[in-house]
Length: 268
Image 1: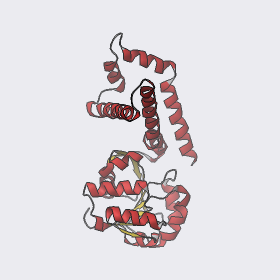
Image 2 (image 1 turned 135 degrees about the vertical axis):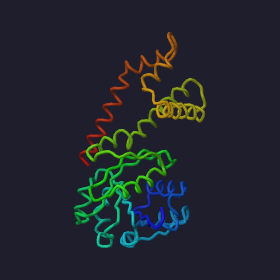
Image 3 (image 1 turned 180 degrees about the horizontal axis):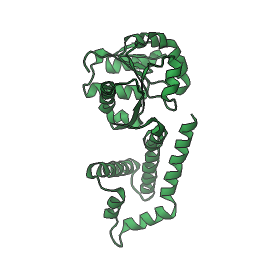
Image 4 (image 1 turned 30 degrees about the vertical axis):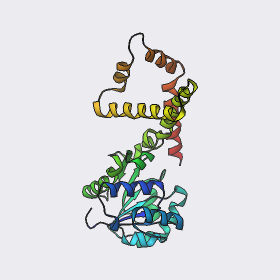
């Protein structure tokens, strides 16, 4: 992204995933990225890994950045903004990946109703460039600016624009959902181990089955129910397994878990 400086306030796992994706897809050069973190060890780790400029000063990052990522924990967001808000340039696009903090909260904390704010919710598969990110922006962000942000976000997976009122749903369906999938993989592997398969091999079988199934949904465009029916041969093994899952309330449990996640997100 020519002549744009990308700044990061916070250099944790998600910021590292974003930086790694941008560099790997060559949408930004390392010399055009600067990040701050209060922990010297983390700054050094990221600097060594990506060869970017790092600093302890949030204000220094804000002063230089054309696109500024807020990647701190919700607890530290207000303090971080206080440290840098006087240094943010008028045309800087502020991209928040902070969970539970809406655009109005960020605008109020900055104290400038003209602030250009993009809110997004990526998930941890961004670490392997398979992230899924929900994105919304305020009225001050132009289409060109939003497209630039989407280009950055799509360097580590998919990114789709949603209205802000759906961001809590994004948390439930993609932000937190890797944990549900990991639990499912672990349960399948445990069952395979119980029947004699070595654990490492069991994890590989279970994880690949989930990966391949997800890819079929995305690439065929077929309804998941139709794909499920393709596996369930008459009188076969799969339909018996599906019957047990239905008896145990598998779908209802997943839906209830997501509802609890979404409601908690609304309360943050």
